[in-house]
Length: 340
Image 1 (spheres, rainbow, N blue to C red):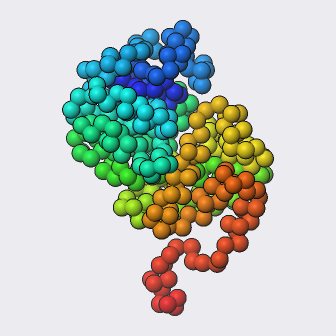
Image 2 (cartoon, rainbow, N blue to C red):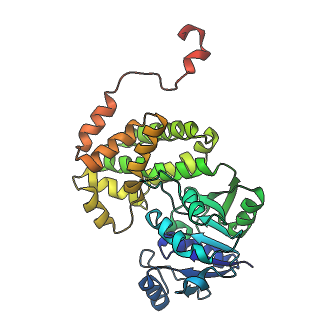
Image 3 (cartoon, rainbow, N blue to C red):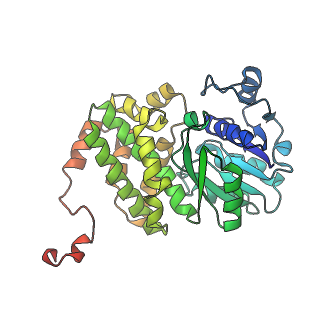
């Protein structure tokens, strides 16, 4: 049995706390928002996951030091926009070699850093890993079969975390490609906004298939240029996460995109969804990475124009459709003599 603290009282953190508790571990939940903890203690459920009883074995921690002391694992489950402030807040309390697994997905706009890079910068003595994949909290907390990937710098850490989370309903793979995993997890949210906008405009399955396929092409193009491995983007944390986020109504990014496609601003859409829409925060960062590494990301560029420049989503789709004619797979013609 491991002693684990979930840092963050959101729906994903609570789904993981239930999973880990069911796996027989000692689980505590800490939040910078005491009202979140108060509600769960009083009602025995999470506001965003109604009807699911939280195990009585889960304890709720209000004190920073108590949250991190003598823990075998810390799970960073706050929204991506709060990862740095949370890591900074707890940094002086972390012991050397403390294992922290991040489950937030995003890229910081002003630094273009991934979540694990932020944690490592704020807590350089920590052993930081990443847990990512096609996983909706609404399904994980109900025990529906799910697969996910843990990425770490050492095989030992990856396998340690794998063993903690693995169960008959939660299959965990390991990977050394932390960068690829994090880019896939962050940038798929931006493409999911586009997929939602297409739904809001009344477009069909053909459009969504195109967005998913060309979206993963953009993400992998950037990721490989940054040093990640192409194979990661055709796996669970790449195309797998992209499919589930573009297709499911559990996806806050898709739901926000639908509202934007129907004419709402991104702020109005976020207010209606009533949850943090990570793709809005990652969109500018993705564009920043594209410029830094000189990579074309046409879908992500159009999403930025819609979100922050007031562009009409319908006009954006037309512009994507009427781009210059080109090969689907760059360089493929080199394999066929008749095309040279």
